[in-house]
Figure 1 (cartoon, helix red, strand yellow):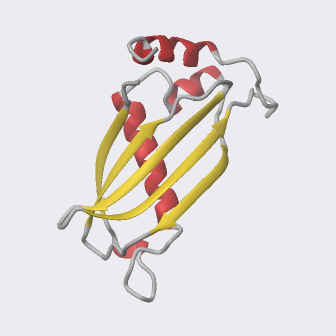
Figure 2 (cartoon, one colour):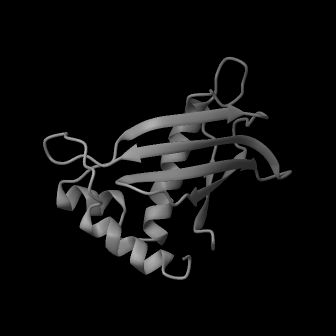
Length: 142
């Protein structure tokens, strides 16, 4: 199966570091979000803007973060966001965050998002825009 992924770069800011002068562990969750936003810009049709326009959302259901090596202020974090195909009304991603200067893997993780409707009720049927997105980007992945 062909992998669908995106790569973006974020420079570590002062506001993202802790008292040990390392990226605070909670910041990696924000970097995952930055990765998903970049992914949506490069593979449009199932991005946050599309969801807002349709009134269907995909909040985080599960998140896993493993911190492996530090990032420091002014380092460039290279965020790899990989779409993981799963059955059902859900979005799954894997992440790898590297330190650009030496290509060290600093963090890896996963997220699962479940689709909800305007009333906050979990959806079990795949939203039409997600079905169209999968046809567009996964057609060669059967």
